Length: 311
Image (cartoon, rainbow, N blue to C red; front, side):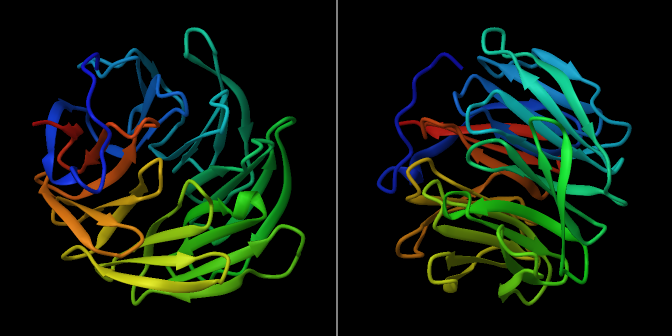
């Protein structure tokens, strides 16, 4: 997209409009690279990369796995990309700093079931993967070696993230709980709290201190990771919330749900700022671009949409 759009803020979020829509097949994840040059889309057919603009045809399509991709993550530098799949593997990819195209680095094996989520540590040397096999596995990204297996959830682990500058790992599960894992401890994760139904996705704020969790129980919840306590319950989406994303400054939270709507929230107050009837089917994935001028949504209606502020 060559058009420059204003920063999405608390004051103008009600002016968000659909600025581009393309059909993309089955979509499970969307994510911008840290420099904003790549929009990565996880699909049933592989990894689709839109480089320097959202075209109707991806710039690069990579047949990454033997089954649908369930998760994608960029390292903080943008030089590494990780994908997790229903084929039980995690794959690490190099990202070329000039062309922004990707090439395979490692295939990481060890999970016994679908890989639902992947997340890099702030330094990028550690990768966490969450699986339907009820475990979280930690991988050394420099040599492709499994360093640890974290066990404690009683059902599949659906999401994982690093918090507090990489000092802890947060996980969400189908067992309804959220857990904190101290990287220096070998004990089972400490229970942070729980939802009334299974946790579909978690995201940590850019500052690493606020956690947002989306659940089938129709709520999004906010948590203070320093205090290890819940700070807000947002009554968010009919039939369940599927995904969440923080704006780059951490002031806004976007949530997507089963009814096809996107809601925008003020993080500090928990106030609902705007509701968008975005898609005809569930909103499966959301992400703000690094400059905070666009929000991307992927849906079960097989469309990818970009949202920006228009007068």
